[in-house]
Amino acid sequence: MQLSEQGRNLIYVVVGGLVIGTALAFVTINQVPLYGNDVPLYALFLQWNKAVLAGWIWQLVTSIIIAPPTLSGILDVAFNAMALAWLDGLLSYTYSKKQYYAVFLATGIAGNIFSLANGPRVVSFGASGGIFGLLAGVISFDLVTNRRVNPGLMLWFGVIFIFSSFLFVYVDWIAHAGGALLGLVLGYGIGMRRGPDNA
Image (cartoon, rainbow, N blue to C red; front, side, top):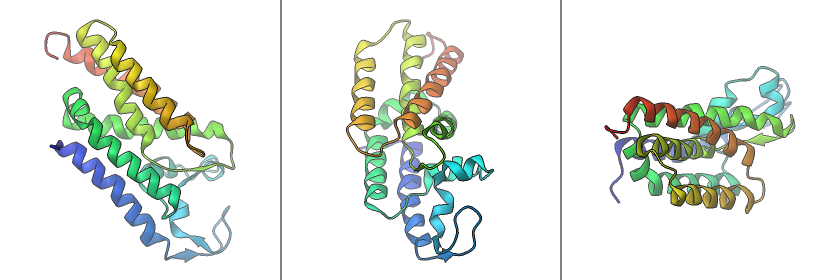
């Protein structure tokens, strides 16, 4: 499978986040405001909504990358890396290199902001909000550049969204939806700039 440079780099980031999370698991810290004692260092970089609401806003970004060395962390990283590899051809056709990275990051953050609606006690992590943002942007981009709704693309997105958001326990479907909503807006804007004749 031939991957674009940006797709390959994002896979490295996603997998590297688990490696970093594993390394940080060997370091514990004490007397951390909100957290208390004997906290694994990686926990400060996941999104704990209570901490974000208290001002720890870096977690909106770091939780996209850092994953804990737990079963859920490993599965999340594996799924996201496979999704990026599988979708890369479609994504690299739609976005320039800079747009690929920018849409991923912006929609990942948007998904995490939406995730605050889950309540202050929820802890979350993962890149899937950004991946859904990229994929949703393809839909609106295609709408603009081809001047038609692509039912196959819509159905494909719907199946992936339902499968990955509701068939697994503890998956943050609100983050998926938030990332997808901003992705639709950004994809539409990118499509309008490129225009139907230059797609």
